[in-house]
Length: 459
Image (cartoon, rainbow, N blue to C red; front, side, top):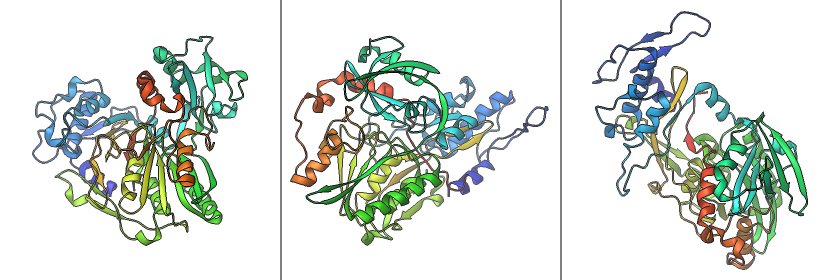
């Protein structure tokens, strides 16, 4: 579907044909959508910017709000243009622009990101309290993973600096995410300390982080942690097969999907997971509706469930947070009309019911928001996030799968007693007692991709 649209609009716009093996200047052919003015003469850079704007004025979900006088050539590159068009995305019921996501990136960089190939420490961090920085996630094949670093460890020093507080968040972000080598002192969960120097390296991300089965009073609970819908889809799908075969063999009747750090990714991957989670009785019913702007209504599409595996869950719990975005929210929204769905976590989800697909412009990909999604009940305008059924802290002091971890523990408590765990101590109410923790963690969370990407047929 996305390919058909792309091929149709490519014929309408400026095309930049670049021959990497030739020394001559790139050839530029000019074409414009019906009714659009032909681009004025200019440099290759100018015409690349013109192309970016022409695509946006055609495929952008809110294209009609972009002012006629918008000057694409006043920006440094396509990335600046994509950021600027976000201002023209007003939606009924919302006070200001809703688009926080349209972006552009060099093709070489995106090819790595979309394939789940990273070049960093493989370390995610969040503040647990204003003076307590914890490891929130570790990529298994990354430098941090190979060094044995675990979720829940406390970071007490960074490059010999012990001022690890919310007031020093920018220092933390630079050292963790934007450095090639950083020295850390970690305090393990057994209170011992270890010094580790991490050097950035390239590795393949592993979105399927953890899975297990728990016995409760209400039956077997299958639990899986999925930190992204991006990556090597063959490996991801093989992991889904393994996980749900395990769940089926264990007699799982309820599933908890931990998406608390999942910023989204491919539509196709969330569809695959939805088909494993859906009840057999809902097979063939509407999963989601994808809607484009008024110029491309002929490409609107309805997807239906096609049940995979033999797990027939009676109830699905989603562990979520403000980092749960896009394809993760799409999965939840699609299942909600058909199943008993509960959301548990430190806060409502991110709020991104729209998506895009990569459009090549020169050596860039541009991603203007191009479609919205709704479920079978036509529900989907959750720009403010999906609300919780129960608020439970992010148990950053525990490793994945610990029954004592606050969010998972709440689900297990519910299945064993019929009620979610009450907040028993200050550590479980950090989200209300320490607003500076929320502010700092938002800064640290900006490093993670958030989006719904439809690349069907574009590979």
